[in-house]
Amino acid sequence: MRTLTARFIAVLILVIPGIIAMTGFLYMKDALFKYLYMHGDDSLTHIPFDWLSFTGGLIMFLAGISFLGGWIFFRDRKRGYIGPRFQETKNKNRPNEQSVNRSS
Image 1 (cartoon, rainbow, N blue to C red):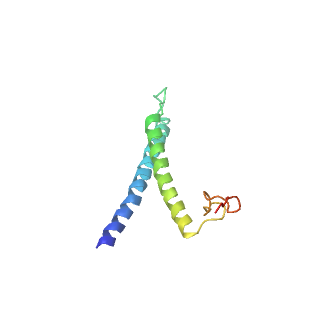
Image 2 (image 1 turned 180 degrees about the vertical axis):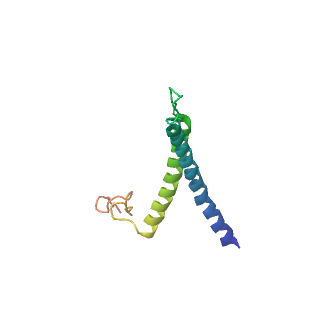
Image 3 (image 1 turned 90 degrees about the vertical axis):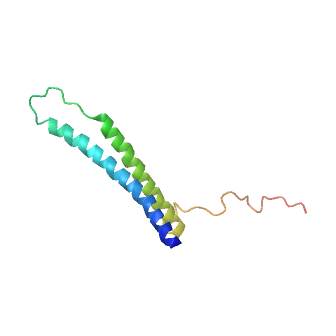
């Protein structure tokens, strides 16, 4: 039962950023389509663009996608699915053994 609860929580951690990204995409789409729809109305002389909705949607979209992309990247790095360019070096912070002065 414990692993089932842990897996459910893990799925929720991934679903929530996905929903945030989807909602942000819908806000951007609605702002753009509303702007394009207003171009068909000849009685309007000034057609405003809803920058607040579009920018908020862009921030939500980028935040959700970056969380999901980062999660996939670190999971693939842990399993060794990525190329050598992105692999983490194991002895990054350890000094070179030849340069260590052993005075014992």
